[in-house]
Length: 589
Image (cartoon, rainbow, N blue to C red; front, side):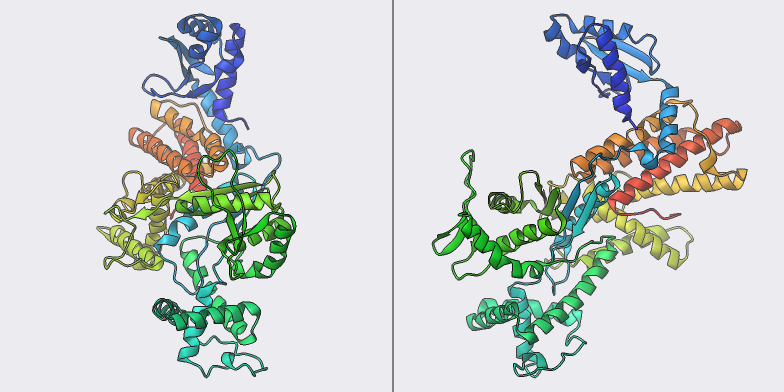
């Protein structure tokens, strides 16, 4: 189904051509003066130089060709050469009627869907999720859902940090505390216990303790590095402990991500590609790409066109140890072999931009990916507190993610139970749903690359550009539709759209008509903030219409059923949009 703006542009392009001008001058945009018109075309301004004619004269000639237009109710040429456009109410109604009939409201599916892998988790195991993990999870989940809705085959991978020094630190600390554990008996050949020798709470205490000791005690750090080496070399007891660490950590991670309505298709980590690294390194050497520099193995990735310094990509340290670069390159190799993706997306803090530039260039130069494979790093800004500094607890520490979620759940529960009768259980469930909208919309409504202030008071408000305001609008629509069914006994979904009878009704129709173009753009640009901006405008348009229109008390049944049909479509579009943003609406609030 054509995008509404394209439909309008085609009509104006034909008018330009009929008037003797280049049809491409007829591109139509949304009006920047909605008080004057709904759409505008500035093509006459561009055509003035080309045809050496006053732009107002060109615009006037084009406007004359639109006098019998089947799409426009008004085409007006205004100085110095703009075309102000208004569409017919019948055209808007017909377009929305078609949207209701089409799958995904007529969003055009790609002729060749892309296979995409998105890497958007990145937590280290044995450590609790904190607020620093929030943005990658929320933004990545939304980008995944948008691309999937738009018809692409997208795979989400958490990419766990599960193979580095932190594992050696945990094993070392555990050995110091409980040396009698069978895992540390080199002569033991039997089966290891199925139950882990620690809980998630104990594990989360062990790691920071061990990390602190290693910074103060070189001998302790040396033992931890030796434990890491033994683990990666395949020592049985250490591998068995590692499996316990993984099982306990992943179970806890899944619970926390589930609270955010975030899920991954793959739960792979650095350990999954460990055995691929030696052969990959040898291939890089054999291909003449990797060479020694101060004892370390590196690949030069600087290009002649660079205007800034791009350091070499280090593959192995001087002691032969692998780095994050090495693991990420081996992961690219693994993903290409297993899935043959058309595109790889990495979502991290924007301060890692140079790092990913090095890794991507190295992957291309060494042939891990071909020129046809797109590599994209989306760098996000920092989530800050009201003081403008990275978000912390009141005591100044890094806040655990579950603590933040619990605080916002409590704030929403307080607001929902304030001055209204509602059961505690329903209030708790509703608060959880609305709190998630507050967190996610508060983040996603900002362009990913920008820093933003995490303001609980603002994000949990039912007014303004917030998640709760969007949900309140959806719940209001649901309430009207439920009352209509009660009053009339009719199914609201069976009602037919009609031409708009007021300015606010037409404005609501034209907002809904933008859906396809918006969703296509949000997918192409990996930009969830475009969905947020759209639903905020749509919610505002609905609320203006609602406040001006006595929907349920309207005596003209045909008019009323037309309004109900419009509300059904508005509800459905809003619910699809919040679904791709990663949250849902309750039945009542």
